[in-house]
Image 1: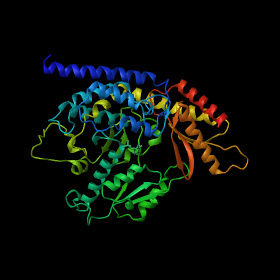
Image 2: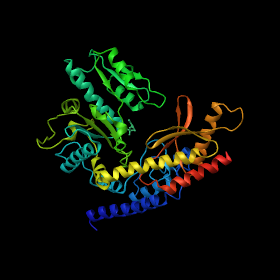
Image 3: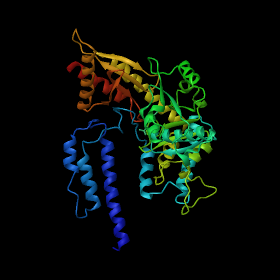
Length: 439
Ligand SMILES: *Cc1c(COP(=O)(O)O)cnc(C)c1O
């Protein structure tokens, strides 16, 4: 064999082996524990090898890696995972992600990969159609919703300051007019980090109190706006999902929108979306020119809209997912997740010792488990709630994450995976019942 043939033979062996590993993993998800079954120290022992002096064959590296990580993975791509807001991986999105690495195109400039540039153009257009956003809005495919907040807020910062004659890209924020950010007290923590990264500082965020359901009342906002009418103000609070549109009435009036691909669109991690009505502010806050770069007049160079430079062709998985689902498929997926979340909540709170705390109209709810002794206090209920969450994970039957809300412990029920079905719902309710009878 000549060298070229040897290279491809190595690649073939390792990819075929990986394909088998992945199929086995995905095929066994419904039979295996959804929680990890190994400890951190086990994982360290298996993975933290002495840094190798010598080379290892690629297929051996992969075999060892699979072996060492067995039991250390959460079954979040399967149907019995209800923790945080992870989301599943659609078949086409998973399959599209593999050649994304195999072809390893740079997603910064059209000159480096015209295909990736055009795919992202189409993703932006399709996503705006799906989400009912203005066709003229600019967009960026970023790493996640956290970076979508950064992108949107960078454009907002630019737009507010340029109106006051301040060039913050050139002069920074030293001595600039102070910006205020109004946000619900129930906002996502990533807004705070975006504000920190952008040099606005967390002190510029004004918490507007949410009501007992976690909603912001319009009166609270207008009051805050009226208080200091001349301070440049960013309103940062809008989250977005494609269905249940009535819940988003008014969202179309925003100047920008941030959302995640890994959540309801079920694409693999590493994809968030930012949309901005003020194209000029977006571009001015992000674009970058250098003499050795090649810019094409006709093309959309991602570097002009994205905070990153080197980036993978992350639009490819999104393109595949949007094509696989279409508008109808997205609606079905959202509808199923909501229905199964409601089913789980109804089933679980029907069990002895369980209590519904809060239920959204969509795919999310909070429950807690009551300590049944006569003089039980809130702390006892907190403890039992944590115990049941842990026991469910321990059983391997379901994975829920806990949360502290207004000082008390709750179990979050969050359904966000195309794989979750009626059988999973029944199975998880039964597992919860067994645990409540025992614990
Ligand atoms: C999920 C979520 C985030 C987190 O973004 P990631 O970068 O995906 O972790 C931020 N903001 C909102 C509104 C979210 O729903």
